[in-house]
Length: 129
Image (cartoon, rainbow, N blue to C red; front, side):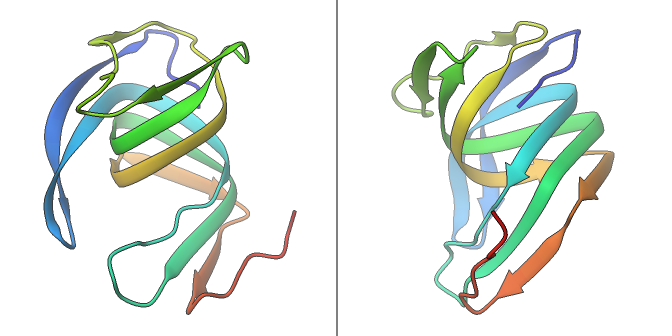
């Protein structure tokens, strides 16, 4: 994930989910790029999933995460949750995270552009590697 050159900010907030509000870390920024994006639902119904080679978010971007783990600059692995190690209130500019794994409650953005978007339903797996 690449935040914008101006950095961003974070705070704790509730995200609305199918199971009601969930305590989440909210990361706000002006842009982000996600690669090899593969979200799936975990709300008790049939599995629904998307996959995208890349997802580009621009404008007023907010990521609501209940857990976030990744390698900072490819060097050290950090895991953040709302209750244990919350993200810092200010996200420095040009932070690069690799090997990211996140439980994502919600993404909002003024503009979302996806390359290679593929929807899936009923437990079918994406066979592209």
